[in-house]
Length: 219
Image 1: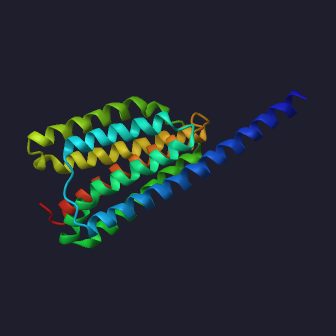
Image 2 (image 1 turned 180 degrees about the vertical axis):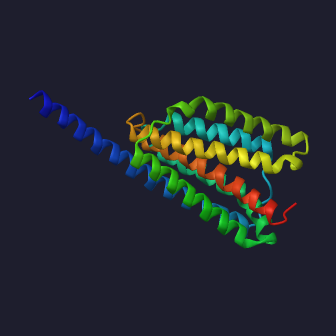
Image 3 (image 1 turned 60 degrees about the vertical axis):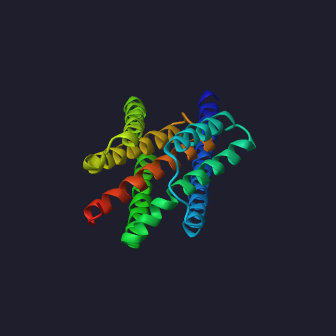
């Protein structure tokens, strides 16, 4: 009877994990699609570059709102608001790359999507515990934020390739960590999970785009 009860609990846990995975990636796809739509609209309207301080306030503000409301329908609302904010922010960046080579954007999106899929699939199949990456990710994100703030006052262009490569590493680590947390039962909220993966996708996409631009002759 004890073995039967244990099997029942394990079965329930597997169903719950599969449900979180399914909802997470559905939500992630919708968030990416909504961000792309807002980016396209922003590009058509020729929206200019966002003030960096408004960007920082928006990033922290929307992230906080998503975390605080993740257990209610408002979590969905704030998640889409956050995705839309990111979409508007990158619109002028995409316009700049469109003027250089439109294929750079398509290649960056394809590479980012393939990387996300590969890392997620590996973690789901192997069920590897990547919780040990937590400290590295926290430090890495604060380093990236520090570099962003510093770039407002100092020209960081000579270090652009190194910064972008480091950002890709952080994004990959975040994907592994978050997917692992879902698969191993540490994350039960698909709104928080999808928002984390969306941030990973956003960081990696912009970083790969910049790397492709650098190697493609973008100054």
